[in-house]
Image (tube, rainbow, N blue to C red; front, top):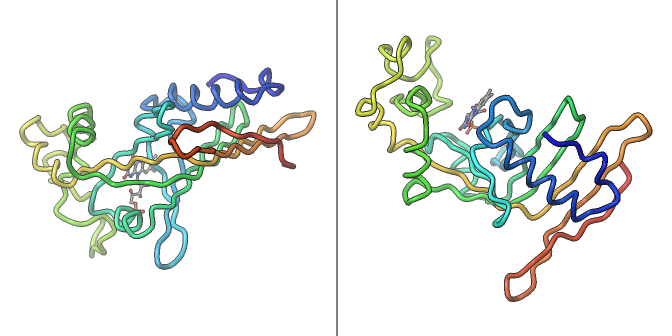
Length: 208
Ligand SMILES: Cc1cc2nc3c(=O)[nH]c(=O)nc-3n(C[C@H](O)[C@H](O)[C@H](O)COP(=O)(O)O)c2cc1C
């Protein structure tokens, strides 16, 4: 991930770098921003979990995640599309918190493409009979035992597709905190759209 430290005098460059860093982190397990803490609203209050960032499309301000459609977060998003996402880079010492509205998709070209691109070993996660979070008498991995030592074949994996879905999050607000020896700094970015749908990021410094 590229540093933000030499861009602090220019909000436009800072904004571009945020999206560029997200884009280069998506699907790259070695990048700290490839994992995020994703928050949705449940009836009990906010709920957090770790998700892998699969795709970032700066043009549409959209982040993409893969999910089991039966997992509670999907119903939570259907009930309340407001979500928040947090990234932390311990090397660059930068925190990025995003707010946006999320959509869950179970069918369509985005889902088909994501499924096609998913690894066979990852598809195991969608082959369980039980809903994620179901209480069990014993420890369980929730996929057929035969796939403990080998990935499913292409055809064996296809049963999982009905449980596979895509969450997309369109970002409206960004909060960037950069830790520095000389003092931490923090910037806020709000997406401002006009009636035609065109928009731009409005940025300002805030106290850290
Ligand atoms: C490192 C890591 C990566 C994960 N990636 C995903 C992911 O990409 N998609 C997903 O649905 N769950 C992922 N999980 C599991 C979720 O954190 C969560 O436990 C699961 O999705 C159930 O969430 P829910 O009960 O809040 O719906 C990941 C967990 C860890 C520890």
